[in-house]
Length: 303
Image (tube, rainbow, N blue to C red; front, side):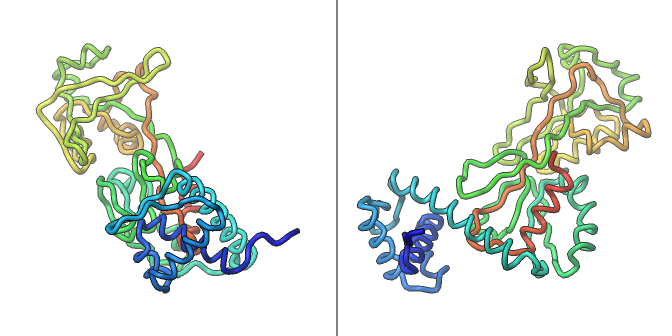
């Protein structure tokens, strides 16, 4: 095989990818332990080699050109493959250790991830875990999280998104509420009921309820005098207290349904779901502890 790159060229590609990820020559230099001038020279060498312009530079910022973005995406993938190959060959027997930070939404934290973390630590006792529970999105660059789980894939191309599961939605109420107000039989019947609302933290908008009708998901705007925000489990607690109907994830109320504390309604219109995604940055050097937790969560929850 003919040699295509020397050590300097490979180093230049790494520094270019780092500058593209951080949108700054200075930040890339700090992260790599070199000078900003060294990063700039590396990018210039690549531009000369490729005969294209990789960045648009101003006095305040840099941004990728269209050609630069295409080169960045492919270079980042190639570097990740090299790191993965080395991990399998040289680091597969390394013991995961150290502290990692994960951000979780409230329902998925309490009913999915927190109950299985002791099993993870039993498998990897040298790993320490900091858990941040919030329904707000986190910024990996500013908040130094290793992983997060959220309800949708982000627009940020710097993040990898892996689906853990599609969580089924159900509408529930207490037997006492249904005796007092009647059991809804159709979507139109919801107009005459107290439907507990949940407000999206990012926008303050109330989330419509989703049903499966004629093979398609249908969003329905409901009304109610109770509204929970930030913590979706507040709506479940209100439902258990007899405040009204509430749509939530089946895993949140499955014990209540088993013991009769809550009753599922509109079963014929059930079957809709929302995804939960595992998110983490594209990493040039992913630690064994982070990889171990990713593999563990996918093993537990992914189809």
